[in-house]
Image 1 (cartoon, rainbow, N blue to C red):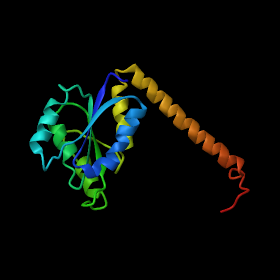
Image 2 (image 1 turned 90 degrees about the vertical axis):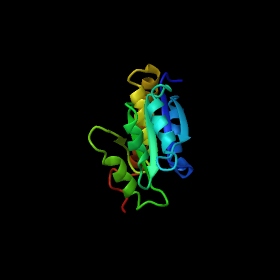
Image 3 (image 1 turned 180 degrees about the vertical axis):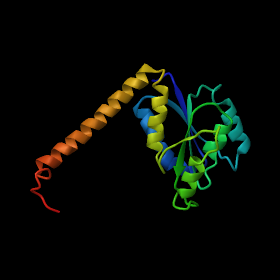
Image 4 (image 1 turned 135 degrees about the horizontal axis):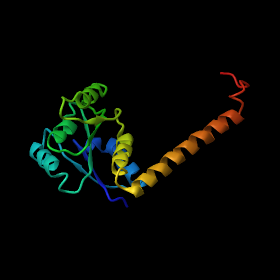
Length: 173
């Protein structure tokens, strides 16, 4: 298991389907994490305390997912010096996810939040693991293996497509 620890937080249980993708990739890479619900609007004191104590509690980065107005990543970033990775979530009260994307993406100077794609929790998990890999050789090695396996998968797919005649133009659309 890695020496680092990542926090995965979300505004409500309805975000869990998306945010579990970050947990899955961290598990695959054997990076420690904790996952919980911290609502910027319904539990602001909990959110403030979480942000203020995150470093003391051993976290090295925070992945924060939220839909709709999506204030959670930015508000947590206001209370910590740890890297915060925002995951915009396309929720039931969302305007096709754009409200969430823009709420996380358009942070004011001095309060940075790294933003991944809409529902991009998997990439948030990978980015958090890359942050950990700066000081954790085990995490760095796991990431190298992960990327190598991804490359091998793409090359195998390319080989199959080319074997079936697509490269030579034998197969039409």
